[in-house]
Amino acid sequence: MPNVRIVTDSTADLPPDLVSRYGITVVPLKVLFEQDVYRDGVDISLDDFYRRLVDQPSSTSQPSPAEFLEVYQPFSEQGDSIVSIHISAALSGTHQSAQLAKSMMPKADIELIDSKVTSVGLGLIVLAAAKSVQEGWNKHEVIHFVNWLVDNIRVYFMVNTLDYLQRGGRIGRAHAFLGTLLNIKPLLKLSDGLVTPHEKVRGRTKCLDRIAEIGKELSEQRGQLVYATLHGNAPKLGQELEERLFSRLGYEPEYRTRAGAVIGTHTGPGVVGVAYHPVYHK
Image (cartoon, rainbow, N blue to C red; front, top):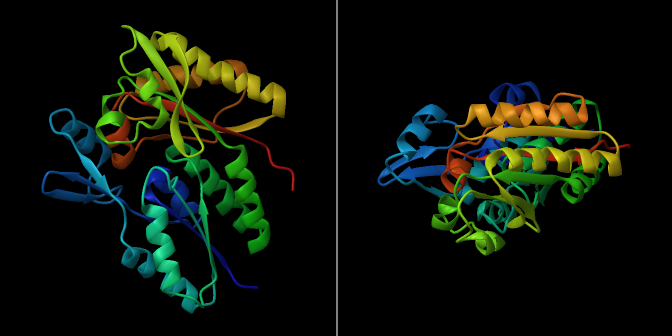
């Protein structure tokens, strides 16, 4: 039976120890400060990135098809199957680059999946897929599982300001929240691959409460959840959200992480959020 290789991109924002432990291959996007180009998660630390973001706007770019080929070719040559799971195609051209690379390798066994989410939502899908591979699931079982996860993942987050999403052109349907009243915090979600408004909530504390309450509501509907949390450069907010989640769900997140440089470019340092999915029964 051929090995199954899980490939993703750096917007999954997975902690490096999990990437290593579960044999996940990460193709980096790039973050740019004027003429300076850094590979996300490789060439610039998060502390340095957020420090620089305070004074200087950044931009991002997707991997090239050649960069995907560099990953796919060795796996294919040794007879492995590849399940490549990426940031929403509505948010980035990364999935298209992967498709172009696949088209250059017609004999390779590559399954491309548009996660329709990013960051902690993508990471939760990728981690679950990689765990299923280590448990000995075959390619078809893994693909079925990943598609189920794509249909069942839920991502909710709060940003301190919509300016970064607007500047980067990733605001999606959340433009409806522009010009809101002072101290109204937009509670956002990812829906159909786009940043979408969920609710207007007054103040950060109530917004964190609402995100956690959504988790409780989902658990009442769907049973126990798997969840993961993130923040950009706001550890106190991240801790406050986790405390609220624990008080409502009664168990810890699968993991906690920080928004990487690419995601941070588009959300700003004040982002805090969570991804949920129900427990899967094979």
